[in-house]
Image (cartoon, rainbow, N blue to C red):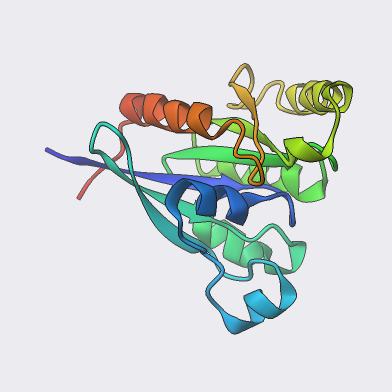
Length: 177
């Protein structure tokens, strides 16, 4: 029996969720004209990703703006695992916490954290951003999970993200089609 894994890509608006999905899949999940005009996700976008093992997963890029929280909730309602994206130059923001709470409510258990926009900060700021997110995730299912610095510009961290997706997906029950 083939399993199917859905991965929620969550985090505050403009923290790089769509850029991460585009870097992994080559697909821009912002497909609506209004999303292009405003430069932010309004609806959840889905992109397929084939892992090196041959397993197919679905990445669900959810809106990070509070005005579209109902769309975020809908997008995260059936995910098996999650990638929490936090911009290294911005740090933890209100929707970061909301998205963790939504994922917890829907019983997501596997996942990890991506510190995006790593190219915009120095090493000390990157370290402080990691400490901040580790503190926030204490007591959540993200506690103790990897925190991976990533840049959509210079692609640092992309291989490590792929490896972590594969590892977590292998340990995730998923759904029977």
